[in-house]
Image (spheres, rainbow, N blue to C red):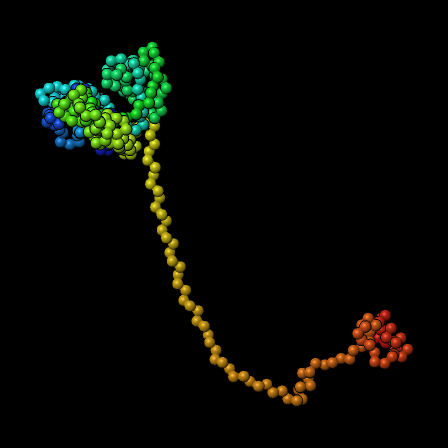
Length: 345
């Protein structure tokens, strides 16, 4: 079933009013429906300041979405049983749309009980059951649980029944073959079309066309086929809208099991100041000096020459050889000098 689009931030709950018989909500003036809602709920229909609820029309599913500001207003809206259309009271089924932090599952063979009877007989020790309602005339019941985990079983009186995951699907009307609603709430019940060729002039039993034709995409298949490209496209858009719906503003106590938004990142640090400018160091340029010739007198040249000392004979220095053989006297003196270097001869 299509759900309501994202309401404004001050509206915390959304109640869906789904007709249970074929009708067209657009045939009734909106102010007439507004007066009927105010009469059944006891709420002011058009307050001047701070409205407690607002009503929106969902054209694809032929339903009404009523956004409420508090749980008290939501409980009053769930008691609505009819809306006036064409001077008739059309019965409606009121239920709250699912929101973040909740999950849904369905059970089979629940009987023809209404929402109050289902809530009275259902019980679960692991999860909190928020609401329950029958799914058409199939005998199944749709249950909304608190939290994001789905229990495997729930209690129905003295029985324990299996809980199956519930996935939203795009419905195709069996009367007008439009996508988005069932035949029980078809707004075009007076414009029935053939299920084979899609023509509005004859019934399906009287169709002479051998090849089917889809009314929605024009393909060679029935309008109710799950492989219809138009139906798959709408299904993909619905799933994307459910994943990307903005989160509603939490009440003062906050939604259970919901984390607050992360704080904004700190601002980036300011850039460092530029380094101070240093003036360039002045360079000192000396003028080139002419070469000066150095003239040394001849008398001083002898003093600048290195003094040459004659090489003495030493037995330890084989490079030094005497020019003449030494006499025995000089040899003995030389040996004594080597033996006693500090003793004078």
